[in-house]
Length: 320
Length: 296
Image 1 (cartoon, rainbow over the protein chains, first blue to last red):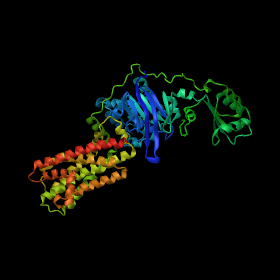
Image 2: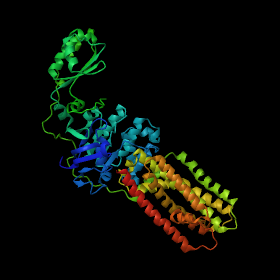
Image 3: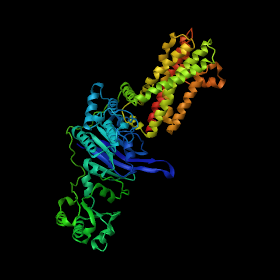
Image 4: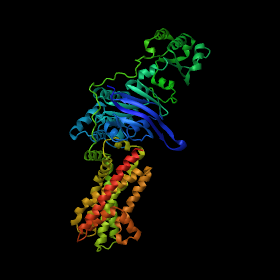
């Protein structure tokens, strides 16, 4: 276990555009993605996540650097990603007018599922993702979430050893999201499928990923298990406060927190070591400030905290 | 942990504030590698084979055929009415006794139906797919790109093929031409279809914007119309040169020959061979273009 690398990426660099308006979308990225792990790429919009996976799929040529799949150079064998990988891109125009069942069945055939087996394979994946009721409806006439789910079904069908999914759960309701996570973990556990998953959702990253690479401005700023990454954030906790009305700044604890809080209207977020956080919250909830306090929470660091601590600049990661 | 503070429940809040293990950051093992549950037998995966052309073509064709079935029926009418309209129009102008000119008009109008679908609609479709970034779907499947072009073209052709038969039969009746050579319609439609579909796909894929793909496709169709329907001997010199360059002219000539009393089969075979050769070249270019524009 662990010896076989589904992807070995070295020095991957890709620039978009030319001249002074060009953007370095991927900057010397090194990654090892092991067979049978659910590997996440987390980062805000514009971090270079899609550029990275499009290169993994052979859809973009790197300016420099190399990509090996199972020990073979993708540049020397450009058909490798298409043969080994089920891919979910961001656009679905190619499938939009197809009924869900037809989209899944024809994709399965294109991945070499035999004519005899295709119906069974199709029905199984529709059932697994809860799409049976809408099987006969064109994707374009489904809700955004169901439409995305149908596209996920086309990426999963045909049992590839690798899955590369660009934001598979965007727009899905919680039940559908769990169905997708379950489907991915089931494939990882039973057949050793490698999953590379782009997300900007912290909850998703913490729930399903074995390892996560945190991307910011085209660079990998961290790559580890979610637990290890969180443990690396100097033992801090996050104290969130929501004030009912103007906070009582004459309270010394409130004044202290005001100096270090990130504020968003009457919502404050403060990162502290656990003992200080407990002490501050204890003083707030026993003193006069309690009357002004609407809600509060104390939480262990999330991957978002990791991201911000590591110097991530944007704050558009999703938490729900 | 989230507690809504309320003065009446202050004791409950305070008890919730007692130090809890969950407040501490999780401390995992110091090594980066976590045990990942998976089958012990795991080795490098079996390399899945590329899907053969026939299977891929069939799947693309079936998928495209399933797209908005109702919307495609009017296509058949538009494609044939346009050509039949031209036949009727020219019937009032042309000398019916000139069977060579008549044969060419009928053949030109029939190939126009093919051009409408293959050049115009296919250029639009591929232009739209490129603009939306939707070519990724096909390029990340283990299929030959030619299967995508031909499968898509064939699905449109399914709706247009009856239009070619109707146009040819109406033309034969209007211009009193022999119907015996009509079987030649099959190779003519298939080969000119492949040829023009390849060109239509290239035009659509090369166009930087979908509107340009539409304009270029319609322009191409107009050229096929003029150079195909107007008899060759009535074209100016430059028109004749353009006609010789246009691959659909060879399909028109092959079909026009079938309407003449003494068919020169060697010429027909040669014309069809030119169509086939250009068709193969156009498809090759289309396949290369599909991969090139999709993998910048």
